[in-house]
Image (cartoon, rainbow, N blue to C red; front, side):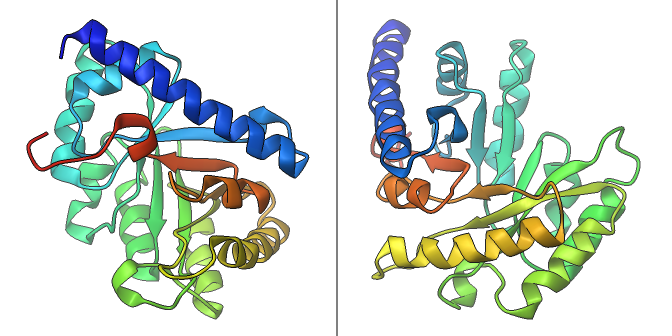
Length: 235
């Protein structure tokens, strides 16, 4: 596909996603600009990031450091600097690489990881934004914290000079009504905002459940398939 053809394809998808977000906001009694679209560009080339940036997308997300670091470098070499979100499970030995390009880390779920990030970012000119990943189903394989661990991790982030506690992130559990799950997240996000003024970001909702996420207070929705198309291993 030519660049022009891909741009037209992405533009059409972006219009549809933005319309879904606008309708969801209207149904929830929220202004459309209350929700930020984060494009999940994993497995897609840097050229797609550049095209999306040209279409007005400001935030992009990746979940694997090896792919993300190379892609961010290629995009930055073109003079384009979107706001990069890291959304995958982060190993401590990858922390220094990730903070080299990420503006937001959405998947912090342990005190040890928060400590590693704090030590790595202490010399940054400005703190890096951190979201604490909340587990809505208790499945350790999917990452996230629950119960009092949410506040232990949040305290560790908030007490670090190199980090800024920005809010929470979650993924709806498999096989459960996403609305019920996001309703629980809304309660926790409200508690977070009270405990830590300014930590008001709620990253929740993907291609299949963004409407439910917006209904329950998401400020950011992470959209991949509905925006970029079905992924395959050849991309």
